[in-house]
Structures are given as structure tokens and as C-alpha cells.
Amino acid sequence: MDFEVTDIRRTPQGNITAAVFSDGTGVALHPEAALEYSVRIGTEFSPEQIEELQQRSAVYAARDKAVEYLARREHSSKELIMKLRKKDFDAETARAAVELCRERGYVDDRRFAEMWIISRLKKHPEGRSSLAAGLARKGVPREIAAEVLEEKLSPESQDDALARSLAKYLRTRSADPKKIINHLLRRGFRYADIKRHMEGLERYEEETGLEYNEYD
Image 1 (spheres, one colour):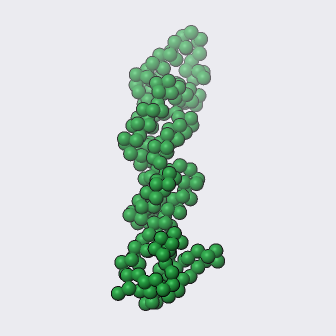
Image 2: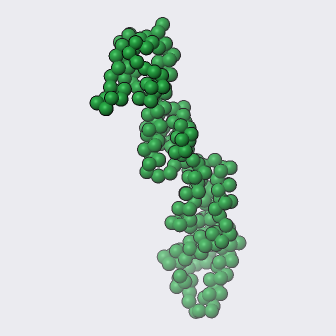
Image 3: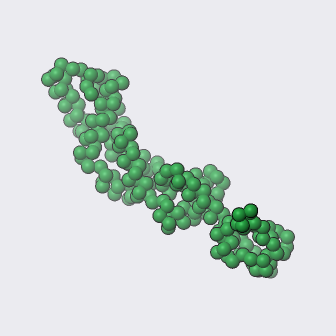
């Protein structure tokens, strides 16, 4: 049995907010869904079509919320899905909304990974393994994370990050070599690279007479 649209309710801006059917029920609508399904007074819809209309409206509403998040900063696809789930959108709706954003170029996991790595290296220098773990927590697919890390992390950039992380630690923490090494290992740097930098510090101390905590 089909149901006819008997009334359309609109916002002051003219956007459709709901369609009222001949059985007296009303369905909340997103304007884009109403346009897509050609909702007009007199149009008839089957129960299955009405359900599709509701689902599509939910996807567009979730897409709008995702765009709000993206306007503030870059997000990975998984981050957006998780945030939409917290706004009570179901998993299928959240995934469909994020896919719409991906189609428009609003969300791109590779772009997110690149920007996130650049930001982390600038503000919180860390090693490859820590960066890889961070991207995994952000939901970046493993293949994309590996490719971006390979592109963005040169030996020189990792040396620079290690040197800055070491200098920052020495300014405020213990100069105990074991504690320094453990700290840098937790930051994701390789043991061999840490030892190389530590040996450089030891030579610096011998040549200048300054101790680790005076090194900057």
C-alpha cells in the first residue's frame, strides 16, 4: 500500500523539514534527500521507499555534522565515524556519511596522515614506531600509514627529531644515561640511533667539560 504526501512543512528559510503522509504519519527530511526523492504534495511512496527516504535523510544529516568537524581540523575516516557514533548515528549511517565526504574530497586518510606526521614532528618529535602507533590509533589504514611514513621520514628528519627530543629532555629531566635511553625508546626512536647520539653527547662533554644537563 502506498501513502500520499499530503503536506510539506518547511523552515522559515524554505527548507523542507517534514513530509506528512495520508495515514497521518510524518517523516523528518533533509532538504537534499527530499530533492533526491522528488518529495512533493501528491507524490506517493511505498513503506519501503519511506524507510529509504528516512535513511537517506539521516546520512545527509550525519554528513553535515562530519563537515562541521572537518571545518575545525583534518580527521581520519575512522575518527569521523567514531564521532558520529557518539552523536547517536548508527554505524551504517556514519560510514555512508563519511563516504560522501570522501567522494567530495573533504576527508582523505593520506592527507590526514601527512599533516598529522608533520605536526607531530614539529611539536612532539618522536620516532617512526611511535608515529606508526599514533596513526594506527587515529584509524589510518596500515598500508597508507606505511607509505606516508616512508615518504615523510628521511634519515635526516629522524636524526633531527631525535636530537630535539633529547635536548628537550635534558633541559628538564635527569641526566642518567639509562633514563635518557629509556625515554627515547618510549618515544619510538631506534636504540642504535639513540646510542649514536649519546656517544656524541659524551664526546661533547669530554671536549667542553659541560655535563649532559648543560647541553642545549
